Length: 227
Ligand SMILES: Nc1nc2c(c(=O)[nH]1)N[C@H]1C(S)=C(S)[C@@H](COP(=O)(O)O)O[C@H]1N2
Ligand SMILES: [Mo]
Image (cartoon, rainbow, N blue to C red):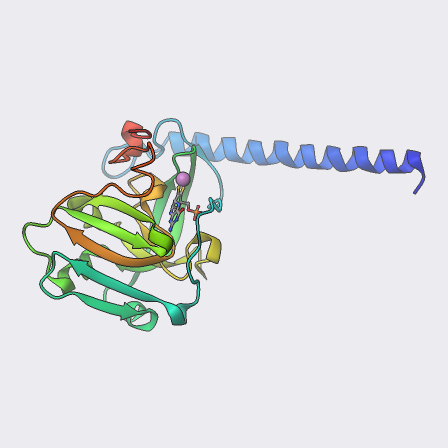
């Protein structure tokens, strides 16, 4: 390629990328403005402070587990009368499995509004296990030792689930296949990917990020970002 035409192509390419970036920012600003004008049924603003709306979940990394549904096993244990395990098929066949819509908020500043999920409420699993009255916390257990702690009342909220579909497709490996936790009213690090267990507990047990400077509770509306 001749030097001049190479330069022209390089400039054109840069212009297209820059233009794409501008369009992306305009779309994101528009979604953010729209969300800021809305109020949730519980009276909170739809968008927590300091957040900006993007269209789809961003893969945020982490040490992946085995994404194969065939390898999946969920242990529900701890302070329960009847601990049990489920494979992937058994989980999907639970009578409480349902579609749900929920916004998610990442501590790094992005939010996704109205994400569509398929999953089962944690409350249904808790009921099946027979949670002992002394229980105060749920520890989400994931591949490679990742854990996240959630208060029992918040883990039993109707929108707190285990999910295996996002926007109509099976969860991608990067987003925690085959099953992740979803606690949408706390920052997204409390939604563990590559989930392996739910442990009910009397004592609180700060998890991976909570022991690395992040807030133990993580309420986005109070901007509980750092501990
Ligand atoms: N097992 C596991 N789950 C995890 C993480 C992780 O490192 N390992 N990272 C958390 C963090 S910090 C965020 S922001 C979200 C990101 O989810 P996403 O990659 O699907 O956007 O997953 C959370 N769940
Ligand atoms: Mo994160």
